[in-house]
Length: 340
Image (cartoon, helix red, strand yellow):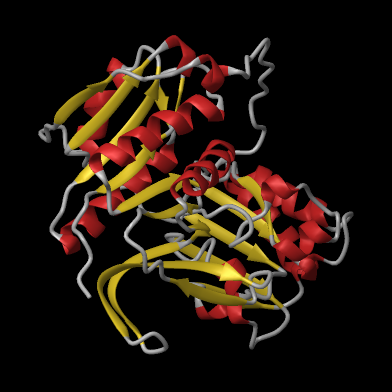
């Protein structure tokens, strides 16, 4: 069975004219997917006063940008956004539609999927194009989207395939797709969309917005010091903080350390946390489950400290230190401070 060859779409998330990194990551991934399918990459950009967003989307790989500008689309509320996207889907019939697994994407994606009676795979960590042989129903599908994500609490990695003709829809976690360097020579086509919105589509009004800056920026950190359950206690986690301070880095943690209450979830790295790619990642007392490694194994340099010489973290580490972090980390702090 050969499916139609619609284009690959990315919902472009923006806030006051600043494009979310996850959307640019998805545009780069969409170029790869569209190249395998022989189709195009198209972005869907909604909001108000968006002209400054268009050229960067071309530079990262959008060949067409559908732009809907309307004061009723700013700030984001899910009903009008969903209405505009659903109307565009009906008109242009994309093959794939991707959202970032952000607060907006997680609210918007399911609403669009429900209206289209389509499936949606949430929190994907990888996407591939491949043929699918449905031996149960004796159907063969060419060039389907392999939607890869952790399942059962991160204990297995599942590959999910949609076999219908409506858009294959996914939300994708932030940071898991590589953002390529922009090519300022790329050009594209802008399609201005006039939203057809009724009062029923704008019943929710934003009266006031109170915003706080995030205190943790693991995605942008160049140096990260992470602690796991092997740190031993919340008090011992001060060693991780001191080492991060000595290096001018950010503090991170494994899920086990977060679940133990030693540090907030904002610091969690892994499949159920943040995916990072720093220049230096120091893992202290982290065993290195596949769920954690998936969030940090593309770091440029990885140093692992663990008492267990067979800990899985050593399989991805560039340098491994077998020993007690309670004696090793203070020595590292002293050495780094001496060179500062």
